[in-house]
Each structure stands twice: as C-alpha cells, then as structure tokens.
Amino acid sequence: MSDLYQQAFEYATSFLKEANDLPIQVSDQARADLAHLDFNLPIDGVDAQQVIQELNQWVTPATMKMGSPRFFGFVIGGAYPVSVASNWLGTAWDQNTGLEKTTPAVAALERISGRWMLDMLGLPAQSAVAFVTGATVANFTALAAARNQVFNQAGWDVEANGLIGAPEVHIIISEESHPTVYKSLAMLGFGRNRVTKVPTDAQGRIDMAQFPEVKDNSIIITQAGNINSGSFDPIGDICDRVADKNAWVHVDGAFGLWAMASNQYKHLGLGIEKADSWATDAHKWLNVPYDSGLAFVKNEHALKAAMAITASYLPSENAERNPSDYTPELSRRARGIDIYAVLRHLGQAGVAELVERCCSCAQRFADHFEAAGFEVMNDVVLNQVVVCFGSEEKNLKIMEAIQQDGTCWAGQTIWKGRLAMRISVSNWQTGLEAVDESWAVMETILAELK
Ligand SMILES: Cc1ncc(COP(=O)(O)O)c(C=O)c1O
Image (cartoon, rainbow, N blue to C red; front, side):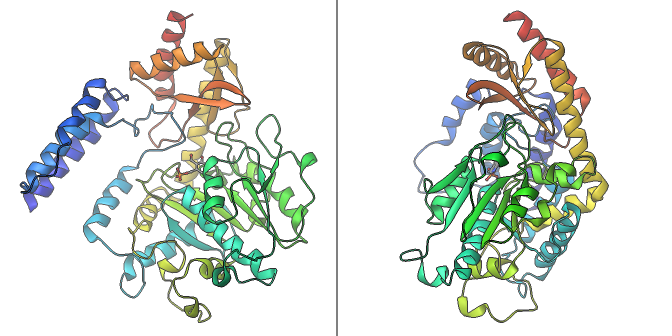
C-alpha cells in the first residue's frame, strides 16, 4: 500500500513542482492522447499501481495549469500548499461529514472556521454556516433558507406543502446576476423567468434610481463582485429600502465577499452585514482545492428548516452542530479541513494581503493596457480587468494567440454588449512579476497582430 501512496505522492509533487514552468494550455496531442483511457471496461481489473501510472501518463499532460500564477481565466484561484496537504490528509481520514457524534473532529473544524470567517468578513456572529460544493450550491442553499422564511412569514410551510397553492413570492434580481443564480431559482421552483430584473449602471451595479417598489414576500438577490467589473451592488442601501417588508436580501459574493477581509477594500460592501444571507466560494479567492463553497445565513432556524433531513428533528435545538443540518447533502467530504488549514496558515492579515495583492496586480494590468492605448472597460475596483482590443474578430485572434503561447491564460467575456478579454487575478501565487511577465507576452502578440 505504501508503495502505491508513495508513487501517487511523487507524481503529484512533481506535477506541482513543474506546473508553473509548463505551458498553461493543454496541447492538441495531450487532448488526443486521452483516447488511451477510453475502452470498454475489461472483465478483469489491473494492479492499483498500474492505474495510478496510467492516470499520470495520460491525465497529467492533459491538465490545464489552472493553478499557475499566470492563469487569469474565469474567476478561479489555485490551492495554497497547506490546503493541498490538508486535503490529502482529509482524503486519508475519509470522514463522512454528516453528524457531529460520528465525525467530531471535522465537525469541530467547520464550527471553528465558520466562526472565524463570520468575524473576518464582518458578518453577524449568530449566522449559520453551510459548507457546500461551490457558489452555485451556496446560492441554492441560502435561497432555500430565504424561501423558508419568506413563506413562513406569509403563513405557508413550504417544506411541508410545496409550492402548489402557495402565496406569491416576488424575486427581484440584478440584470447582471450570474447565470447560476437562475439555475438555483429554477431548482427551488421559483422559475428562471418569474423575476423582476433591475437595470444596472455602467459598472454593473444595481441602479437604485430604477429599483422597483418592493412588496411583502420578496427575495432580493444582489451581488458582491460583478463577474466582469468586480463592482458591488449598493447592498446596504437595498437592505435599508426593504427593512420594513417581509423581504430577504441575499448576496452572491462568489469571489467578492473575500474583499470584506481587507480594510482597504471592505468599503465596497458597505452595509453588507444588514443582508440575510451571503454565498461565496472558498475554491476561488481563498485558494483551497475544489469543491468548496460557503453559505452564511443570519437566521439559522430558516436554514435548518430548509436543509435538515427530518422536520420533526427541528424544534429540538440540539447542542451539537450536525453539518448535515445545514447542507443539501447528508454524506459528504469534510470541506472544513482545507478552509481551517488556510485560515490558520494565513491569519486575518494573510487573507487581507492576498486580496490586496491580487487587486494591485489587476491595477498593474490595467495600467499596462492603458499605457499601450487599449481600452479598459471597467473601473478597476477589485481584482477584475476587462480590456477591449478593438473589433470582435481582433479580440478573438489576440486571445487565441495568448492562449496558444501558453505563458499565461485569459478568456473572453461579453461586457455591456461587447466582446472583450477578461482578466481575473485570484491566485495565491500571483504577484507583480507574474503580471509583468504575462504583459510582456501580450505586448509582443499585440504588436505582431497590429
Ligand atoms: C458571481 C458568481 N456567482 C456564482 C458563481 C458560481 O460558482 P461555482 O462555479 O463555484 O458554483 C460564480 C462563478 O464564477 C460567480 O462568479
């Protein structure tokens, strides 16, 4: 057994050692070679070491180096070494993280790291924390709690009676909401289309001048960190506007919520603590391995009512914190281990430093683009930069050349109706050197394709 683990460890560590110096983009050959893994499952199996050897042989080369300090695609981070190591330990421990009685250690790590994050992000201390797979499920989980409370106050037990015949609930959502929020609304039975969309300003923030009259029984979905511009909705103002209604304000802060850990950036989320729930990803800006998202919910009872497995269990306010009372799953991975490990390693100052460094890098990119005469389409308030090089065709050509070069990686977006390149700086390794190295490549490509 130890040979097998040693072999896997060596493959993994040599990948981690070399990854930063390898092309980020997966080559066509490596993609084609994946065919070696594809056959009808034989009657007889093979030795475990052969399996690991084959995985390394064909999967490692076809792995996009998303953890590189020069990967700026989507809005994803890498994984701090401490979280990779804790993840390995967590896999060895293989805890079924459902009940505190049976998995006391990992349940404790969730309880402790949950408290740390509420404190660090300035969210209400009494909030419940759910450790889920990612921001999509964090939004779903928080909105399930919203559904419970809003219906409950309207005299309807939605968990018991479902939605057929239920009172009407109004969903108010930014026109810039992430597509996965619509998916959550669909899964919760609210429907993707039965929403009032609020127009946004030039930075993608909800425009309060166009914010609709809010009726009782409403759920308002806001954003802390626009996927393109990084800007925040005026969340505090929205909470004030609806304070006297049966209304729930949710914040999708998939990456942006972490800005609240920085004294320099937390002004973006002024009044955010007045909201009812917040969703974020740990596998983005906190840089832990996939899959790791978090839902914070002020009303613990609403979350447990929506998520606990048996309704009869609810009224007894149990002294134990059973992780499965807060999440869609019963059995699951102990995600709190990696979050605990990174927070313990970085401390509050380390998380703030990570946020601030990434934001400085984004600003450096913007400065390079602007100095070279290109249009930066957003106000760079956080870690996001949207740059337009001209026509759609030109943008696509430039992005293709950058990706093919392999030194760095950035992808396309549509921002305010125009195709552009988006840069997101969210990786724990990224510093100004990585930015300048990437810019040098971009500058050459831009000159060649002029
Ligand atoms: C604002 C926002 N919400 C939700 C999501 C979905 O997150 P995940 O892919 O972790 O489920 C993302 C992902 O980029 C996002 O940026």
